[in-house]
Image (cartoon, rainbow, N blue to C red; front, side, top):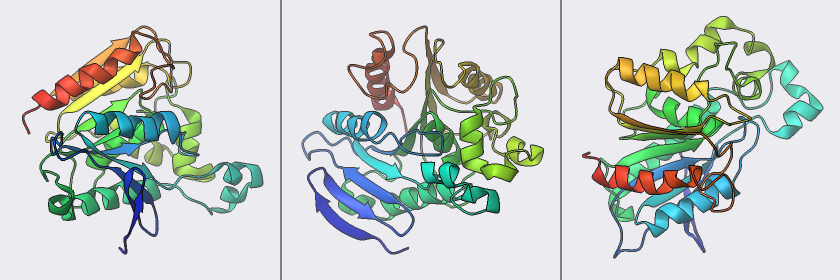
Amino acid sequence: MTVFLVLTMYGQCLWAKTERLTAYLADSASNTGIAVVVCPGGSYCWHDMNYEGRQVAEWLQANGINAFVLKYRVANISAFVLGYRVFGLGNKYPNMLSDVEQALSYIHAHADSLRIDKNRIGVMGFSAGGHLAMMSFTHNRTTVKPAFLCPIYPVVTMSDKRYAHVRSRRGALGVWRQWNKQMRDSLSIEKHIPADCPPVFLVNCVDDPVVKYQNSELLDSALTAKNILHQYLQYQTGGHGFGASDSKGTVESQQWKKEFIQWILNLNL
């Protein structure tokens, strides 16, 4: 994989053929050595690069955590407007998985120069990005795996008809594979939690109007069944898509940021 480094006002912009990875590196004085690949949400059709990308990275950076915002491959709005995915064209699984795998591999390979601890690299994702964050371990096909996972109001199931987020499923699988039971099951995270799953920090809100809150409950139950170390914060209010914003969501849901910093700094990796 060829990667080109370009300086930006945020630190470094890491470019690859199939994805764009923008680094927000912590100051030397506050650097904890922790790194987080940030996967914005958007139903596997677009990216919320503001609330779930840049703002998340700047918040992590301010707390001494190196952040890398990943613009992974998605279907794009044009795929639905023009209908070319009917013919099997366009981005779909496993494109986005390949992108997060490449991001992890790049950070791991350049950890020393980036002042990052190779054993403290994790993935955080929002909504569909939360699904991708979990897949970065559960479906990882490389030797470089994340040390912790942070799905925030995530899409989890693609097979449970009661709770599946249909748009994300279609975005990930495409027009025809979305009806394939085997493919749906294969990307339903709650069915694929391995015994060696790393620690998980999970957040969602009961009043989420986009991704049904039961997705996170399914994941919590699956993690509990496998005795996986995890923290699950379920808020009553906050909705969906608040990311690291101080203006979206509610005072209740905005607490997740403080809880995460405490969790990650106390995590024995």
